[in-house]
Image 1 (cartoon, rainbow, N blue to C red):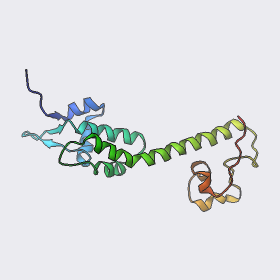
Image 2: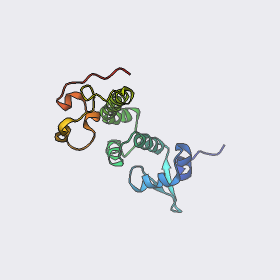
Image 3: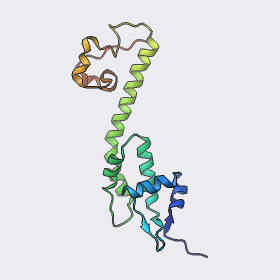
Image 4: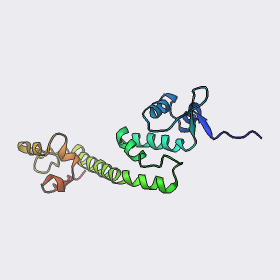
Length: 162
């Protein structure tokens, strides 16, 4: 029986993760994953790099920047494959950010559902009405929609029944 190599080619990593070879090459060039070089100069990856690549891809889909992802990956050991405990430790680094994004999405959904489904055009009950441009003091962006009511310093307005 042939001995299984401890290293994977870039094509094998791409096939295992469902990403393009160019993405794997980019992650290696950016130092997010570690590539060794064969005698012929080809990139070789340990099997543990598959988890890192998957973590990067999932994190990007969740909207994290490569800088944020790098910050988490830098917390993994460099001298050995990461253990379950190592992965659990870095997952807590994203947990609060993911929870906040989920809360933002729920607020957006609830406020837009009420607004779109309402049809009343009543400024007295509108959850996102910005009379006298009061939201300008909060900075740029859709603050009435994106921020928590407690951050806005204004009372919660009732949502119209849909």
